[in-house]
Structure formats: C-alpha cells, structure tokens
Image (cartoon, rainbow, N blue to C red; front, side, top):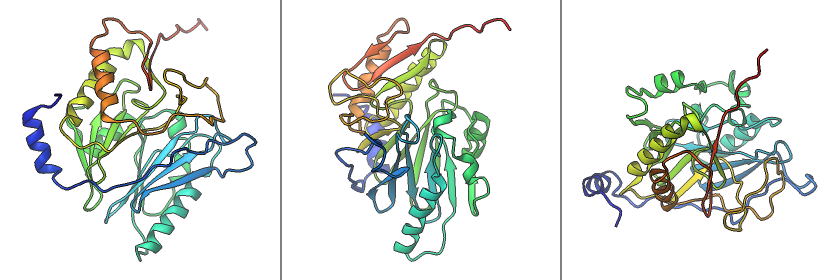
Length: 298
C-alpha cells in the first residue's frame, strides 16, 4: 500500500472534511467538424464556485483548458488561453453570473499561469487594464515573488482566496516556472502541461528536473484526497496508447480530461526507473522527451 504514515496523519488533520463534489462532462466540444456549432469558449460548471473553460479548436488547435475558482475574498483565473480568442469577454460574463448568483457587486481577480508558454498566456493583454485585477507575469521571478516562494522548487506555497486555501507545488521541467495547484476545498489538482492525457513534452537537458518534479508531486499528494487531476490539454484518444496528431482541431473521440492520483504515481514509478531520457508511451499519456536542435550559424 503506497502511503507514508506521517504524511497521512498530517493530511487527516488538514483535509478532515469531505471535499466538495463536482461534475465533469463525458465529452468536451472541441470545435468541429464545421466550426459553426461552438462559441470561442465552452464553459462548464464543475460546481458553483469552480468553473472550467475550454477554448475552441476553431480558434486554435491547442484547445487549452482554463480554470476559474472563487473564494469569498477573491477569484483566481488559471491561464488566459491561446491565440485568436476574446477570453476576457468569456471570463467577465462568467464572473458577472457568479456575482449575481451570490448577490455581490464585485470581487477582485488574480490571474496566474500554469507556465509561460504562448498557448496559456496569449490573452494576458486583455486583462492588463481590467479593474480590480492582479496579473502575475508569466516568468519565474514574478511567480516566486508574488506567492512568496523562498526556496524554489523545494518549498511549496499557499494562496488563500478567502475561506479557500490553494497549495502551490513547484514542478519545473516542462518550463522553469511550472507549478501545480491543489484546491483543498474540492481536492482537485491542476497540473498544467506537466501531467495531462497527452504528450508530456520535456527537453532532454531538463529531464532530470522533470523527474524530480514528478517525484515531488507524487510525495505531495500521497495520503491526500485527490478527486481529479486536471491538465491543460487533451491529446489522447479513447483508444489506449493512441494520441491525436499535433495540429488536430476536431477530436470527436478524445480521452476524458480527468486523470487520477494513480497516473501520477505510475508516471513517477516509470520516470524513477529510467536511466536515460526517452519517449515512453503509457496507456493514457506519453513521456515525450525532445532533443533541442542546435541553432544554425547566422
């Protein structure tokens, strides 16, 4: 049985309450086949204070997922999407709906990023002048300063949205600023582009950093309730070991979004057993190690 007894005692005291339930759709619209039936963002209510936005493949084949989480004092937006979308309009409509349902006139918004790649920060400019909004820049220095990390990546941090504690776990490897977010209220773990049903890209020189990060993430969740592991993309099909080619907009038979704690433990076990960086296909995801190509002389 994979459990660390001291950590289990800690988790029982901190996470004694049953996590708030939420629902996920069996299938997500992806944009297609004719790109006439879907808005730029499909919005799903996981529960009344936790929302998932999926960008249409008709705007960009990346089709990233974004997350909007509400506390009593402020809300947090995880990522701002990829190219060619009016993400602020979608977020503002959703926030207005939440405010009306909760009989509120306003709530501050904090915008953060799972990591700094373009398909997760393209909408940043739309929030730069938004009132009552804090936009954390997508770079390691800004992330560590805002959240108060003192010993990145060995130290975790906590952000309180007001009666809602979020744990931030550094997981560099995909990028140097990647981190996971654990919502104690729902026991949902957001893992960005580091763990999701698809190709987990890591450059060969960063393989050891990636391996340590997955080991650290596995240790963090060991003994804690984990209702869902939600990443930023779906690239796998419903057929085990088979993914959609890069650039696919319409994915009618895509894998479900949610993974579980068992996927992280499996990924950790496989990585710890690897002696050299390599591409490894697992049932629901692929370790996709890439060798950077040298730049040509100018």
